[in-house]
Length: 258
Image (cartoon, rainbow, N blue to C red; front, side, top):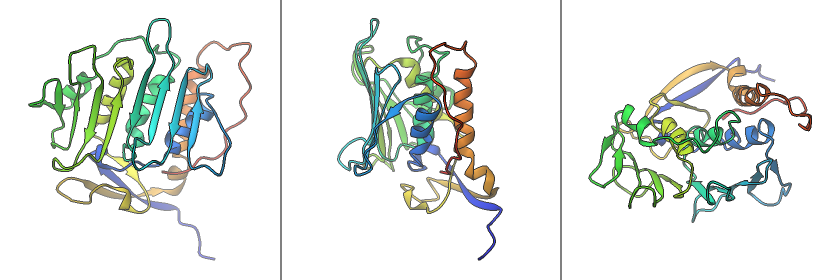
């Protein structure tokens, strides 16, 4: 039996919006183990449905070629009507995580307002010819809010040279702007994201559009990247005053790599 490798070859891909979807567990496992979202148990159906502890939010991951793969619906609250967010199959999980992690942050209420365009402007995104739109420095992604401000949905789209979208994220008119801003902050982040295994999941290998930097990374670092993420997110809840009715959570088990 050949000895196990102590390192793994990892490709760091930039821009991140063209890095492919990545491992869905980067989203679903921390939601369940760090934030207490419950899930169904139907091994015969290729989908995941997670509901928040207060039963107000429902995240559905369903591999459907004709629609968005990720869809989150939130019930109406006293100060906000029902809202939704959805993400295409090739939306990188690291960018979706900005939205989801902000939603589940117990120290940051969703009612806080923010400007989703601000992280993009700071990242060098420029106004487009379309009203209320900005485009990435490389011209392969844009964010817009067509229609009048305060009464229309938000859209984020990644493309390849103006062709059909690689992926699109959609945010309903009542989606908290703080959550959209957390998404655009990750979208504008210039740092690459790691990908292991086959590069076939990337929407393009064109070196004029995508940069891949290969590095040998310790295998343990790759294997426990998800576990480290779960611990960091769980620590946000542990930092709050303990609730007498809070359920006991079992110790975390080893995670998986992306």
